[in-house]
Image 1 (cartoon, rainbow, N blue to C red):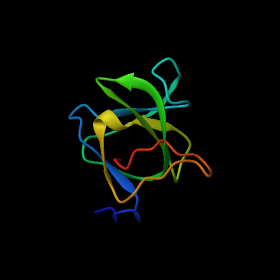
Image 2 (cartoon, rainbow, N blue to C red; image 1 turned 90 degrees about the vertical axis):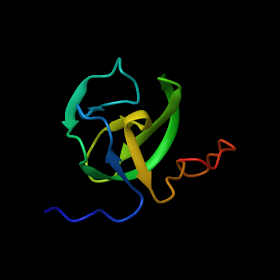
Image 3 (cartoon, helix red, strand yellow; image 1 turned 45 degrees about the vertical axis):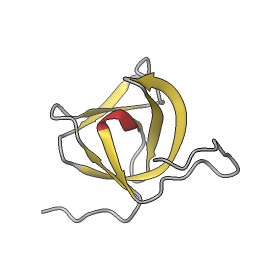
Length: 91
């Protein structure tokens, strides 16, 4: 069994998995798929394309790519890129 990454990390909650994109948008090429219940380190979050009412996307920490927060539950505090503030505490 794989070890849990250090915080913050995300767990895929979509039963069909989640696409990893080059950029935080469904218009961006898919570069991988993370399967259901997989865990991945999260570097930071940004506000980007709205997916089913959720506009947060996570940059992966240990590999290139972005995932929508709509299908990933985070554990730990996922911050913003250095120097940015969105006025929200969720995510």
